[in-house]
Length: 340
Image (cartoon, rainbow, N blue to C red; front, top):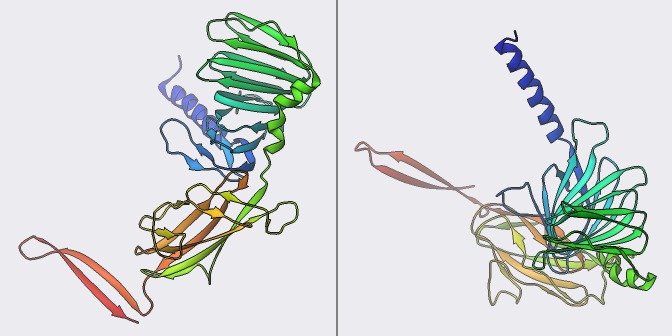
C-alpha cells in the first residue's frame, strides 16, 4: 500500500520537473521590424518585443501592419519568418520530458515562412489544419475571416492534415484546407509563382535601426524639458540614412505624466506620432512626476530604439510628504521642503 507521503513525494517531483521545464526558453526573437508585441499568454497585457527576447512555453507573439519578425527555436535551430498582421503561440511538444522536443507553433492568423533542419520534426497548427514536416522550407498562411489555410512547399515534403483527411505536398506544390473540408489535392506552381508568393520574406530584416539620443545625460528636473534626437541608421553602413522618410508609430513610455512635443513646444501630447525626414527627427519631453521613463520608438521597416530618461527633483530642493493620524484619529498630511 502506498502511503500519502509517497503520493506527496511523487507530486512534488512532478512539480519540480514542470517548473524546470517552464524555465527553459522555447524560442528567441532574433529580428524585429516595425511593431511586434508579445505576452505570456491568457489575459496578460501585450508588451513590445525587441531583439534577443526569450519566448517560453505558451508565449504569444503578434505583428502589426508593415511589421515583421524572425524567431529561432532553441532546441533545433528551426528558423521562422513572421509576416505582418500575424498572431501565434510558440510551443515545444515534450518539453522537459523527452531529449528532443518537437518545435511547434499555433497560428491564429497571418503568415509564416519556416526553415527546418533535415533531421528535426516541426509542426504548425491553425484553426483548420496541422502542417507536419521533417526538414524542409515552406510558407503557411491562415485567413481568419475565410477560415482558410494555404501551404506552399519550397523544399522537402509537408503534410497538411485535419480530421477529414490529409494531403502530402512536395517541392513547388500548393494545398489548402477550409473548416469542415479535407485538404485539397496538391497542385504544382511555377518557380515564379512561388517566388512571388514568398517575396515578403525579403522584407523581414529591418531597413533601419532607430537610435534615441537624449541631450545631456538623459536627466531632466521635474517640470523641466529635455530634447531627444531620433536617428534612422542603416544596418549595412552604420550611418544615418539621409534617404529615410518614415512616419513612426506612437512612442511607448512606461512613466505616467510625461508629455511630448514635436513642434518645438507649441503643442503637447502623451503619445505623439513622429515623422523622420532625412533620417532624423526630434521631440521635447516634459514630466512632473519623478522616476525613470523607458521610451521606445518603433516604425515600419525599423528595428525598435530605446532610451531611459530620469525625471529628478528640482535641483537644490527635496520634498518629503508624511501621512499621519492626529489626536482625534483624522488623517493628516505634512509636506516638508528641504533646501540642499
